[in-house]
Image (cartoon, rainbow, N blue to C red; front, side, top):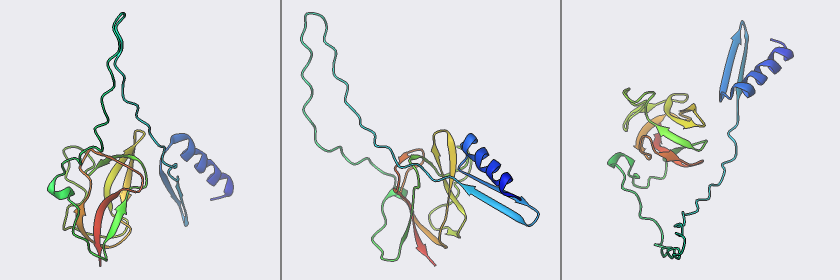
Length: 163
């Protein structure tokens, strides 16, 4: 594979928006992986009630304080602190999916043994499905995110007890 072909492959990755491309030709092997963009900060402004002609607008509601923590499933509860746990973190902002399809079995479950490169989940971001792979060998201790819920950049998805 020559430099011109590699440049063309890079352009294909840029144009198509895929996260990763691997091409093997004979003894040559090229892997091109896009880096995730820096997370963007989202600012939410509460909607103000509209004033009807001749009537004053309602006063804004007082600030209720910090939101209550959402109820999580038992699987999503954080495990007790163990010093040697490895946390698999989200490399991008998106939506967490535990299986390749709604009716399919999850990629991994609590108690499963995993190895490096094994797909653990999918993060959907901007209509692209990004497979999140294990970086270490070990046992899944807990899944820290509910299926179908949004995740932030750097958020812990799984805790793993390394071998």
